[in-house]
Image (cartoon, rainbow, N blue to C red):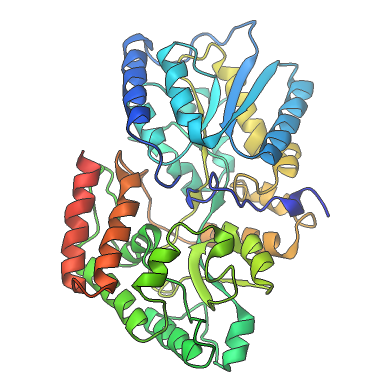
Length: 448
């Protein structure tokens, strides 16, 4: 098996299951430390041009992730050192303590030159002047080589503060074995609607075992966003406000309720039980759901644990207006105070635009956003990984609306969705009340 074939990501640092948007990032003490650190940065960063580019110190790089990611990243950094003659000092930090440590380093004036960010953190750091605008070093970093949508993911107030490490996208993962077992005719995945989806999944549930469902729950923060975008709306606006309408939310919650009432999706008790389940423990992972709306980078893990050759389909309703987007798994950023801005930019260019680095890193931080480098992986990937790459090619080829980085507090909207979903599926509120409650609590979360 080739290196790239082993690298479809399964850890939370790449899933916006965060975790490409890291789920429920620690706030509290971490947020307090971050605020203090960024205030200190704002007071001493000067004009944010990154200095004159000269230093005898090694270029420092910090990231989070698994031991395998560390091994691969160190290997790529070693190749960069050999090719550039630069000295690089790389370090991996456990995800649980990563952002606390980064905030402490900024507060102490010892920030790394290059580091990874996710969730709302690019906006928080950028708005305090802590990040270098990458367009100021674009002579050393080819930004135009990347997919436009992935590039936009790292922009804050029109400036390029983050560089996408790689992408995944929302998809409908389908278990064809359960579809065949139910004897249900497949809809055309390129043109199917939400009504088609409801009929399809209800029929599967009706013709399979009682503990098997046509679909796992569709009630998630991410699926709300995709549904809103299909209506021509945004979950978050450029100004950091909630952009989805109450009418669209009511329709979304109504459809989700109907799926449960028809038996196509599980009820409140099972959804609550599985709320914090790993990918492997989901209904799809255990072979008890025929469809699951989730991130494309889950395909390999779910195929392995379910024991079936799963498929990636577009979401229902995509043929009219695209709701999906290229979701950057993470971002590479450069400190505004780095003394080596040009060399830091050259490192980022190497990591995302060189075939050598892409061959080493594979899909570990998402599907490469450079289409030529994606094509260069052909022949190195297993079937699931190749399907993920082809799906990202399809998403990248579509005209999709821009997607601003979520504002501060947006990571708390996940818990809002969970609470409102429980109330809805327990029958304590109806879809209209769910929409109004969700809006009120989501607005409060992003305005705090």
